[in-house]
Image (cartoon, rainbow, N blue to C red):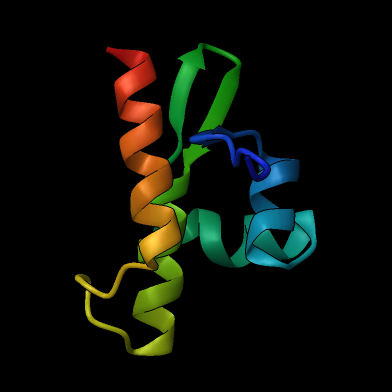
Length: 81
């Protein structure tokens, strides 16, 4: 089985996932993508929201989903139920 990509990512991992620095993430992505607060001081960004943001920047339709990502989502959904 391949590596599991977390669904919720702290800012350092979210920035790495997008492929930019944390400061660039704060200045660019975080202005458009709202975090989810796991606790009052623990913001995380959802992988789906980051993917949507990148797809939007790339001009891709919302329904353009990588088949491997769709399978990963199904696996994660099964285990979280």
